[in-house]
Each structure stands twice: as C-alpha cells, then as structure tokens.
Length: 114
Image (cartoon, rainbow, N blue to C red; front, side, top):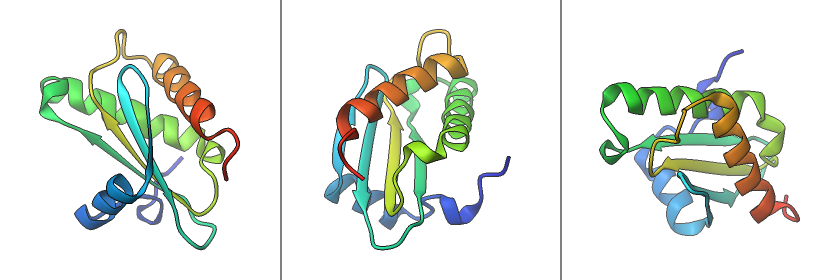
C-alpha cells in the first residue's frame, strides 16, 4: 500500500502549526500532536530526531511508524492532521510493539473526539 504525498505533512510550516496549535498526548516513546481542519482528508507526519539513535535506528523507527499509519488510517479522524514525534527508540522495534503503543495513546487521548 502506498503513502501518497497528499496524506503527508510536507512542509515545516505544517508541522509547526500542528505542534503549536494542536492537542498533545504522550506515550513512553512517542509524542503525538493533532489538530483539525475543515474537510475530510487525513494528513500524517513523522519526525525522528538524532537523539533517538544513529541513522539505521532512526530510519527503522520511521518505517515502522509509516507502516502503522498506513495500516491504521481509520484510527485518524477525517479532517485531522497528526504529527508523530519519536522521543526514544522502542525496545524491540517491531511493528506490533509500535502499533500497540501508538494505538493505546491515540485511543486513550482522543477516544471521544473526531
């Protein structure tokens, strides 16, 4: 399955708007920001900083989060923009571990929204 450009936060300005204007929730390894716009599109962005690890670790985390977003697109409400920021590399770094953590954080915080 593809992750098209129309579904991504692509500019620094978009990331900054989501982070500064949006709501925030945290999990042990991620911080998730979300704001809402008019329309029914969903946009997602992933940010993994150098403190997470070397390039191999950062790219693995990005791939796992990207795949989580593809598989769980319906977990993100229509009209939302979501930025997922990795704070630490998850232990084990498996898709199931990342997915479980992110779904729990999203469901716990925004269960009644959107």
